[in-house]
Length: 208
Image (cartoon, rainbow, N blue to C red; front, side, top):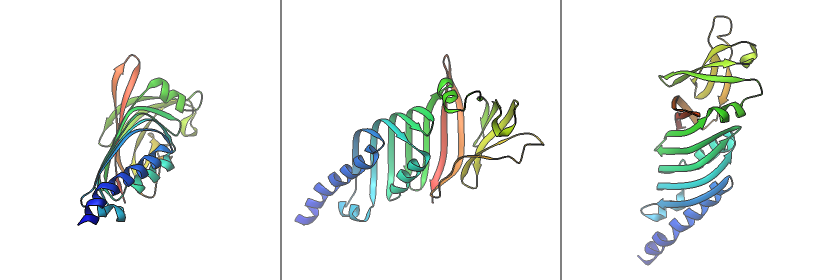
């Protein structure tokens, strides 16, 4: 009985320290809380719930996928960050939720940050978002076509891909995100402010 009591006291603290260290590799961590009952489950990597609040994080798409896979034994997880830079794109007010294997993420960005993430002379403008897909107008030679064209971003075999619309270019594909453990199911985007032009981005996925 004493061993179980001590485990319930100390094992969650060790788990908090481990999670703080893992996330802290990529920026500032403000708080971490872990729930597990009985706590001995933590010895096998099983956690009931985790809540993480972060300040500023910088991760590559591959590092983001690795962090998600490390949390596969967590039943429920909620992560929030004031700002996140994923690859070249800067995001703010980001949240990630995990329920079982299901993942959902949201974050905000603006026109200036989107432009900064693209090569010089390239641009995109949001046209619509429905059914897990986002349609934009792309300019400046994206997809190797030096003209303005419409393109759709969405899930294809678990990857986040974009492809232009049009008879001659429909077969072109640009992979935006791909990870062997994260199966993308859909994305969304909406305008939340005009001055400055700002967007709310969403993604649904699952671990597998």
